[in-house]
Length: 505
Image (cartoon, rainbow, N blue to C red; front, side, top):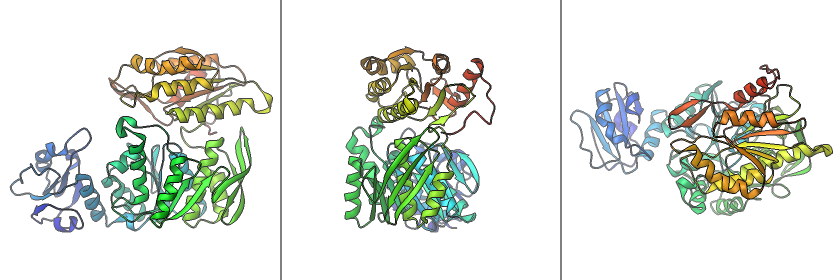
């Protein structure tokens, strides 16, 4: 491929040279001889600072979003108005436009994206389709499970993943699409066949500043990011923003499938939430279908409805939808039980907003109260550093309102002082009136909660979910809530083997 072929369809202000090219990179450390370096301004780092390093590594062409940069002698050059848009076009061209050759389902919203994505993947598998998954927890590519550095990767990695999936015969791709990715145009040029909106609650306001701006970024998925709007929009009409998405999408000629608890094209009847699973009749445009899911709770009824509607939009038969829902035993870090034979329940969950904590503690209360039992809800949580400070007291109050005992600790403090973060959350926690203790050491906090637990109780370890590290001023260190809980249970005298610990709920 030549440089000019690579630039096809990109917005170009000026260009020169047409060498043959062997690859595309935006990280100068990854450039190899014959490659093209896309120098673009990022949130924290300006890639234009590394143009000369990329040339030294063998780049034969540079694409820059800085008109101030001067062309280097002997190197092909292009100036573009938008660095990420250019990266998206070049990446798509280099990999022969894989997003146009695979049916992409994108899922956005504050809560439920990961579980919904896993459910859609499971249903597609039941329908005998090959798919790839890109999301917060991990990436599934051609039978391999890869770590997920970002919920939605940069366009280069995304096109690489889709190209590899196509090479293995995949027909579908399922993606979580974050508000950051939409605002930063990481999915520019991706034609989504189906777009799903789960809900919108307070989160990421350190980045988006207002709920209106946050919603506007989510709405991009339904408007089209350099593409036509999705063929089908699936949206939660029990959510006020979801209802707006339905109206917005209908005006743009997308087919709209609505879902809700008791209303919509997909809704639930005869709901029975038990400790070992959830049963309900799902009403669909094709009639009712009886579903069972090992996932429990009201939030997972919503996730199942969303995934079922998306799979229906992709042409999956009802039998495959029921089978796929039944086959997904658990999602890592999403109400994931840690079972070492103890007479109380320990659950790891990713809940890291006040709304998610309310949902989690409500589910836990229902869990321990079933059958007239009087188990307690014990919650361990913290707030992330370098993020929206205003949600910390809201999280504290949400955790306290539905818990019997709370241990306030650290999550990922990042560059902030853990005690300062705790003090922000403590205001809301004290307002709730719950009994609590404070320990900034998350490992000790988990041990405290487990030592407090009595038969019939539930211990919630909230905030980190699937994450395998804790990020502090000193950097990232290994930390897995599931493993830490196992250690605490062993110390308490319970036997944890690999078959028991980490079972899904």
